[in-house]
Picture 1 (cartoon, rainbow, N blue to C red):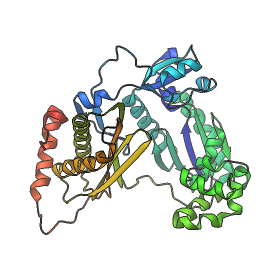
Picture 2 (cartoon, rainbow, N blue to C red):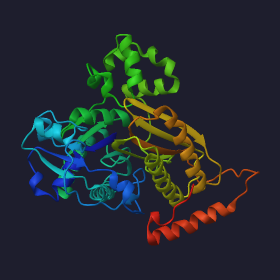
Picture 3 (cartoon, one colour):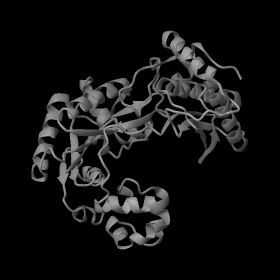
Picture 4 (cartoon, one colour):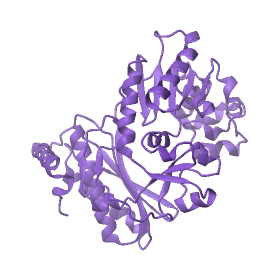
Length: 403
């Protein structure tokens, strides 16, 4: 059997461990302004959670909370009863619940606690895969009989609450993704085990299954398919999506046979920020350079050679992105130049609009690289190593590339 462990309102309950005022009352964790990201110095911090950013920016104390722009990123179950949702601005959240308690996010604390939990789970389950900061897959095959899985899950749930003060919900199934789906049905602080997924999917909306995105949902609803059991009656509708469509059907049936993997290959890494809308071209250009610099530090530290990048922006109701190829071996200068090139392409459509989001994603990451015969440049690699050492000592922003 496979387990999926998901901590309930993780940021809220992690914060409650260090802030007693938040316990047993409606509360939200909010993200402060991202202006610090573009105005304060930053450093690279070794991160034991591979898929999370290792760039930490110095935070300035918040003197005046911007209720109109600060956003709830985690909501307690007590607050959800008032209709408060992740993504609500604080002023909207207070309208729904005047007695609401709030706390600024403390990502370093959440990451450190997550690593401690992972270390504990590794001592209890033979194969553990961390799926996100608050989600884990576990494989009990060869360790516990299927008939023992439910009792073992109850034991783990009790241990996690007693040792870490964190309530968790657990799904159990032969399928990795079946277990994840069952966890959602078990929340909050529940456990659900099924041998046959048919018992669980009846009447469940297609939007509630991981992997069925908005585009596919729209397509299926046009054919009168709104629930998972209805989809299995017309599974041929997903033939147009090829391998991805077949994968979705296998996951719903619980026959995907996907393994729990301790170490997953990192194929991409992104860095992005939302902020108050601005139209100043030069300021936006400065910000894309900062994003490129921080992304370059992560790439260099991890020894990757991305083959392309995606640059993205949001303005109004628009989301636009463009892809560009990189030369190899990796160089910060090349990534910066291409990031600016992508930014300039996108800003042609966004001209005179207020932009509120910028992002850069490095894709097709590889530890090796194909040397361009017209550009054999080992100097780039040595330069990256030198830059890294200097920045470790004096901060990332002590060295900046000019245009």
